[in-house]
Structure formats: structure tokens, C-alpha cells
Image (cartoon, rainbow, N blue to C red; front, top):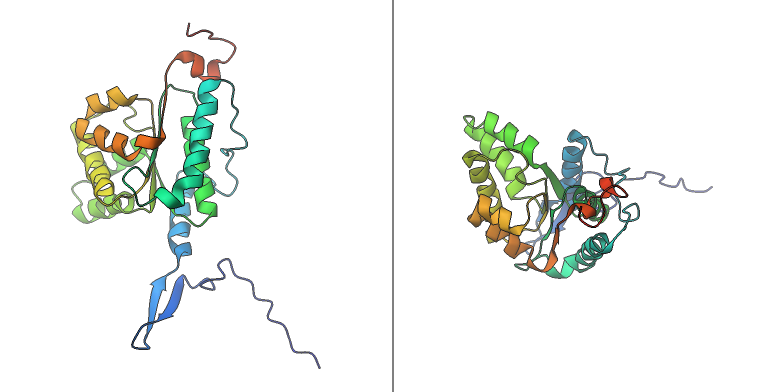
Length: 241
């Protein structure tokens, strides 16, 4: 008589979907630690809330069209950052920034990086700048909520800040971003940043925030300028006119 086979399947084979991994300490006591799948699943829920399905995202490296020298450089820089991430993630310059021209594919490449990291069980929290900042400011009087929301972005394994400083920037916006960026800067926590502002403009908005971001992204800063680099205008605007 054959024994029945265990046909149970799990989304995570490490923790068997319990989100905890039991490890034996030196005193032979079992200690429960969170499985990495827990943070990844939590991050994916934030992406879902923002209307982005990371499992079927259209923003991939494969779907990114290179149409000129700037787009080739941007894609190559993103790919190199992804390949070297494990070796540089604890260093000072462990982040990447896509800054400058509208329509140049900054958000596309940022999300493509995040999707690839999530597939490797590296938790990436998505922060659409204007939506998040507005929500935080609306609830600033609720100290518990305020700190909980900030903690989500301050302590993420990797934080993707999309469209940094989009819209009219207030002193409150800058103060909130400084709190998030400074914490990540001091603790060597990586960021992926997209912004329509070039480096000088980031520094003009706030030098404390801008200089930290630029130092964190030093080796992987992609700055794109000129309307000829707006893919939406491809075939319409030529030679920077």
C-alpha cells in the first residue's frame, strides 16, 4: 500500500506561509523571526493601493524602448545598479536617481527596478510623492498616525520616491522629506528617486535634502535634459527645438 503524498503547496517554502521562521538560540530556545516574505507582501499591498499590480506591471526593462543616447544610458545605468545592488546596498552611495526631463522614462525605469527587486524578495515601498505628502499633512495632528506613516517610508528596505517635489512645494513638504531622507541617509537605507528637477534645482528647493539624495545616488545619477528626450514628443520635437 503506497503512502499518501503531501500535496500541500506554499507561496513561501521557507516559512510555510506562517510569515515566521523558527530558529534555535544558543540556549536551545526557539526564537521566531519574521520571514522576508512578510515585508515583501506588505510592500506589495502598498503598490496595490496605489493602483500598480507588480505581478503584471507593464513597466519592465524589456518594455523600455531606447530611442536615443540618453535613454540608452538611463537603461544601462538602471541595469548596472540592479546587478550591483547586493554588493553596494550597505554603502553610502547605494541609491539611484532619475532626474530631469518629463517623458524620458524616469518612472518606467524606477518601477522596473522595484518589480525586479520584489521578484527577488527585496521589499520596495512605493511612495508617490504628492499623494503621500498630502495624506500625511492632512493627518499631522494625529501624532500616532503621523509617526506610523513616516516610519513606513523611513524604515523600508528600499524606498521608491516617485515624482519628488512635484507640484507646489511648501515648507511642510520639505520638513517631511528631510525627516525621511535624513533617517535613510544616516542608516544607509537605499532609495530609488524620480524627479522632474535636475540636481541644481533639487539643491535650490532644499540643500539639506538635495545634497543627501545626490550623495546617496552619486554613482547612479541619471540626469536628462532637453525636450528631444521626451518620448511623448518623439517625431514632433527635434534637435532640442
